[in-house]
Length: 98
Image (cartoon, rainbow, N blue to C red):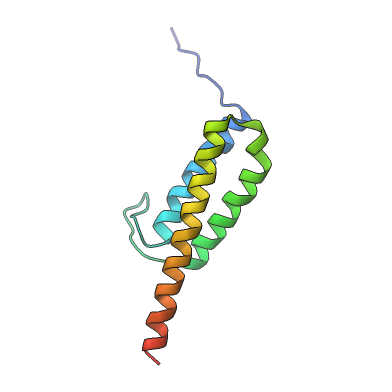
């Protein structure tokens, strides 16, 4: 007998997308490997991902429970902080090469 697969709601699908994009942001900050095992930094891609997560959060925050909302806020805040740190680090490196 075939097992019936549970269908994801739009909210669940968006949360899965949020998780996937946040993982890729960490990788593009150069702080973790991506799902392909690549390890490199691309701050432009990281920024695009962070901005996208921010937009998704603003759209979905009233549809999720308080704990999920806090977790999403924490992810975005931590990514923004790490983006700023990596940006400053690169800027100093570039200035020292001039």
